[in-house]
Image (cartoon, rainbow, N blue to C red; front, side, top):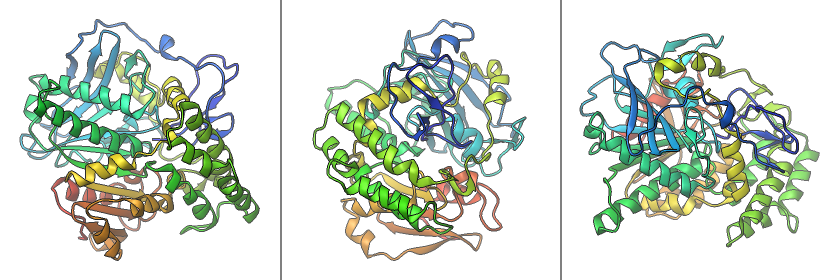
Length: 488
């Protein structure tokens, strides 16, 4: 997600501060999604709990810990895939509650960059949810492992329970490490039967970069394996799902101006603030020009400057006093509740080897330095859609930080084999058990869905008479079964 960061150690030139409870994007020197100045912070030294002997190229696993998934007969496994002796990626696998031996496999990634996928597990779509008092977890009846095996992955190295050399600073580098991790995962005899199953990537927030980049990399690696230029296992990628994602900043950033002025709930700021933001977008050398320069072969410094300028002058000020992840609440919204203290209390049971933090300052700083944030991932998304991977783009209409105005503009800008058909479609009501919960379009194997009343973490929110997560489980199940969206 776009990430909330907790700081350890003294800060001289760099101030990264916590934001809203649901946050995946840090506040840097008062700016949501700002760019750090000065030396980067490295947290790993005081996070290691007990150094363990790594096994490069293999998994280290705790099976059936009894933590989180308590449904009788449903297996789970957590631990590490050691990419090298100094790079270990954390995972937590849950078998499907129904028909696990034939069910597909879904991967889940939160964003940041630098945020842990345990956010999705405990606040959104995992087998258990953290309670509002953050003291325990309760079984989630709308977990995404109802009909699918699901694998939550903390990446890049340094995020969440993952630990080791924090060298990744681009989405492409992250994709390479995730592919390497999956090669290790599928070669393990405990999970090798999953390799030929249908594979899905689900992600949100900075996942608008991660999802398309990872999926395109998987497809390219499959081709290279077939050509004999790369050695490895094919990944049977069939689905890509991206929620509230940052994909094409040039197209999406005007959405902040539109949403702040008019959204389904209330204006966020005064007209004078919107006017200043509009000027920052249109002025010579402003946000629009900087993003354009970044994506016309711009250097890391150009792209990093674009992130700094645009988030300082548009994204951050236009949120006003409202929570950027859920505009029906003032900042900070205490929901979804924190799970960090509880998770650290059970770390030894599940094989965690470091003190868990929701987000990594170091990883976020690495990405800010490369300007990856402002680079356009839409070409990768178009490649994936045109390759026949069933794709869903979804968002919540109460989310500002990656609002539906921007996401829908990105969707409308797509150039794929389904574009003409998509533009001919009218929005239809999306119903769950007869309750209208959003609006959607289908075109070929591409779908778009806007969920009413949901914030940044769509599965975390209730709407109408539906409990939290029911609408999300419906669209997840439909897409995972290789179906277009449809009302029930």
